[in-house]
Length: 399
Image 1 (cartoon, helix red, strand yellow):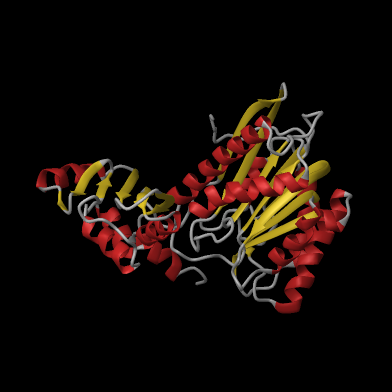
Image 2 (cartoon, rainbow, N blue to C red; image 1 turned 135 degrees about the horizontal axis):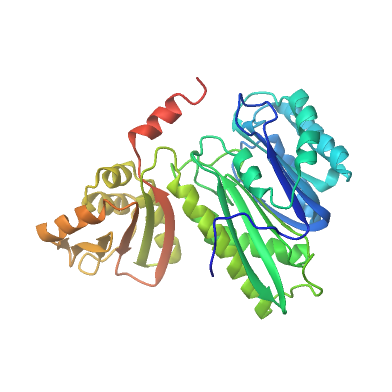
């Protein structure tokens, strides 16, 4: 499945991204609107500390119908108590009035600093401006407007033929820190002109999120605002997709390809990151063990700093697996860094292999592959290295 990092026109949708005034200069308000009622699905953070937008959108998306998503950056509307809920409803109400739809058809999301009130006066002026700026090719601007510490906007799209008709999928995402999703991830908004019932859309999004967004970690921290929302206009199909059909499976594969590309971009742009890292664990006793091993490796500060420094220190990988009490077979375990075997048959592969691995670790994309030699369990995790810049960004986040 070919995925491109370009904006496409998805029939039935318009989008915009503008500078409303929450931030000093950068775009900070995004709006995505369906011309008609669209099927909607969403997955949200499982953290016990959640933003008011998560509470509101999580309740509304259960209806399976939406017309719009309005998103602000610069203020997350988290830990604001009853005021936060009121402000979240007000944000949706302002958008509904400007668009001309029911308030219940507007989903919302916010990202930024925790514990600050939402600037409703700014939104009251900005949202109507965003409605005026709506265009069929406005997703690139929307992707810019949802950024916080991201260094670039994340966008991915693809198209395919289903039932003889061409359909398009497109997604944007943001997130560079406070990332280890436990449902979906940071913020991501997906649109398609496929015709698909809410129940099937919801099931597909959950499976795709588990295979992609839940396979991502920058720093092992789960955000208070994690949200993924998917809207399907149905504009380009006469007959809806059926559960279990070949076309439904092809749609799911296309959605997974778009989401995995977004995940790769998010990992590559982790705060201060210089390298995208794919952790691939095989041969575990179970899928659960493989997942635990992959997350231990991907979240280990020792492993992440070694990757940053180009140090092929396989001992750090074995150490964190052992600390998690994950079963492994010493004589069968293999560790490869950048495709170079550095640990085999219970011992180091030797100085020549270390030299090749040092060269391999200079690449911008690196694979850590571990075969534990115990069973059929497999898991992957997308992550990044840990650098001096990560400390600087987070030490100065609110100052």
